[in-house]
Image 1: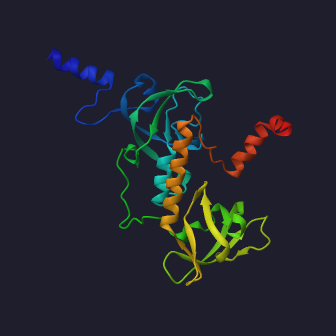
Image 2: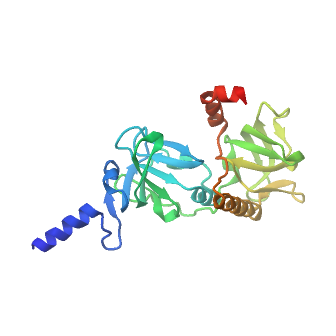
Image 3: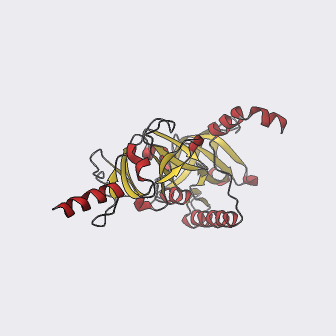
Length: 274
């Protein structure tokens, strides 16, 4: 009897994986389980970015001692985007998630906090407060519908010199005859002379620095998904990151226009001296 009690206590204290499942902990207990493989369920109370990677916090600010951090790697962000989840902020905002992995101690702002770093899709999922995954829709599209881009703020890349325009809000999409195609595009952008952008001039549309993967079809005169183009970009991006990492470098993280403005405000003296 005493042996059974001792085993149970040790399994709880040491975070032993029992029955093939990771021990579940509360987010506020994270610092007590550094180095252990656990499952943590938490409501996403705040989101940010660290080196271009999405960070989910269990509390409104990482400065709170009990804050638990779940950080999603760039590879997983790209993989989610390839499945149609382009707006990660909306995807996780206000949701309850379960994350599984080794609890690491990180030092955001010099403060010791617990973190799980997500490098595989099966490490994170959205659940309800009880831990039950939401019921999936009857049909799940492999990629998002192009009409979902309406009212999104994106970057627009034109074929004429590959010029890129940021802070472009797509106000209207006219679908083509074929499924998931664009025949006409209307945008709101101060830098463009016309609100109506000929689709034949569009090279691609970027969401958070990641291309949707579009090509102009001369026969139908519409923009269509180009899966090979997108996959080639993702492959090349990964190869570049690996080459840089081998030499101790990394790509400059993607920042939204708002994040760039904030960086400039914080480093005003440096920018003026550059």
